[in-house]
Image (cartoon, rainbow, N blue to C red; front, side, top):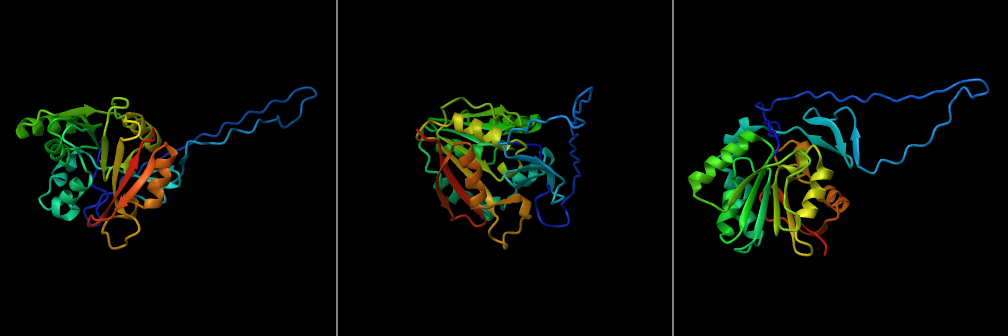
Length: 262
């Protein structure tokens, strides 16, 4: 969904983008006849957003942290061919993932960070009586989605141009939201998480979060582009989603399932 740049692969082809983030301190002092040289201050309310701006600990991350996790740089539409690489299905266990989602023919699904629609069009064949909202924030990817929709002759896929903090999903209407290898790169994970929670059907709507396993050093992906089960559960709980289970049948990734409460 987001503007992507192939930075999360391990190898010499990875590029580094530097992003500077700065905060300006705010100081207020008043002095006058009979006044204290140090003005009284009111303690600032605690920051409950979970965000922090700080120098990147990892050069592949931006200077923004969420609940202790550094947000990663992303890859752009220039990497579209990599999303459609021939060995992706075997490498990521695509068929295992789709089967584990347990979709029904009339389900309404959103694929957030859809890119070229690699998963969107596979999902569409599993919900012939439903529909798939293929969400991306890049107009170039939306154009690619529309072209692939015409080639695949799948009318139940609807490309949606989202925003970094808003996927533009209908409230309480989705049976499943799928996010594959993209959530860890969201600039506004809290806002996106809340929007997803609102879009799921109360009591039954599920989020399927797929991320490379941070707990496994043998997964050949840079650590900033991985997530642990504990971190994912903490972040989803913060936006009101209940943990269902962690499916560990994929070759390199967690499939984490969450649910919107009733």
